[in-house]
Image (tube, rainbow, N blue to C red; front, side, top):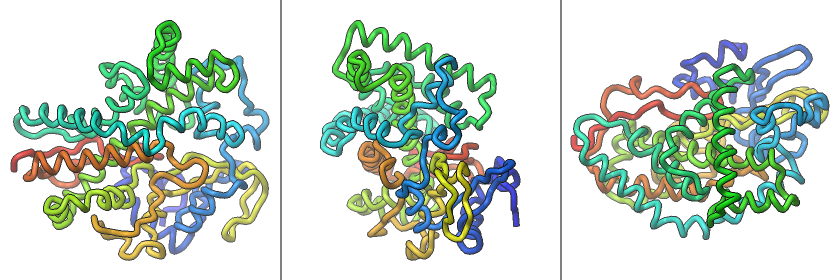
Amino acid sequence: MMNSFESVFQSNFKRGAYPFYSHLRKTDPVFAAWEDGEHTTWIVSGYEDVLELLKTYSFIKNQSKVFPNSEGNHDLPLEARVFQHMMLDVDPPDHTRLRKLVQPYFNPKKIQELSPRIEAIADQLIDEMKVKEGVIDLIDDFAFPLPIIVISELLGVPTEDREKFRRWSNTIVSASDNMDTDFQGDVREFIEYLTLLLKEKKENPKDDLISNLVLHEEEGEQLTEDELYSMIILLIIAGHETTVNLIGNGMYALFEHPDQLEKLRMNHSFIETAIEESLRFYSPVDFSTARWSAEDMDFKGKRIKRGDMVLASISSANRDERKFEDAGTFDVTRKPNPHMAFGYGIHFCLGAPLARLEGKIAFEKLLSAFPAMKMVGNHDESNWRDMFLLRGLRGLYVELDA
């Protein structure tokens, strides 16, 4: 059995992850994955244990509270500071204040108003797919452009720049703790882009989210400059990455389980439960972002020291046999389905209503437009991207008219 962080998380780990998670849940549900001097990185894999981890205030997001020397330094370049002020990585009251600023744009009623526009974007992408010949990549031609166009329009950024966002996003979500030259260069380019965009929004504000954030920043009461940059970067990345993976992973699971695909084709009333099952079965977010132990404590029989990093395995929790009957079975009719694909507690994904709506529209449109669509090649050709936190496909190659 693999017993070190380095050997566990190899480049091909995603393919064999679920048997490993199952082994952890049975034998070592709070797993010491990596020891570095006096501190340990822990991975929590069971459903109830992950639930407790995500909701307890004993594990915090702000690293500077346990490592005072890591407190933000304004002498650092902006491309380094933006990662110290992201809403994902702060605790109340800062988290409460930041989330309150953007929450109105993502409440279910507001998101539902976007439905006609999302349908129009999906229809346009499908029309473009219909005129292509041969094998197409469902990720490049549909799963990626749909959510990036939606979030770009919501934020007020040019949709023609979506390939830039894709590159910058991939750099950031794939990065290790060490910010190498490529990482720093891409983040610097992202910041330079946003600097020009913010200048334009200040001079010519529109009815979009970024213009409203700029207004708050200029008021000087709720949003600092660093927080403004951090918020926009987070919204651009989180606003499309989860949905790209939801659509891609969900369609991949359907192709892997033709009986479930046929059931869904015959009865679209199962689409909403199919979305939830896709989120559970191949969770778009594999691991939570880091939390830190605020104090020495005992957690599920393990001694966790102040300053230890603790990660929740969302994918493992969502396959826990003690919570889900036939947890390893993909069932588009599964109900109830209390998965944690969007997290839990105060850091529950802000964009969950948008991702669910986009996923529902995507499945409905694809299944209606291409009833004979099938995956091309064997499963190994649809490789998982090499990302620790997220689970998504490099490509998903299909024939539209089999």
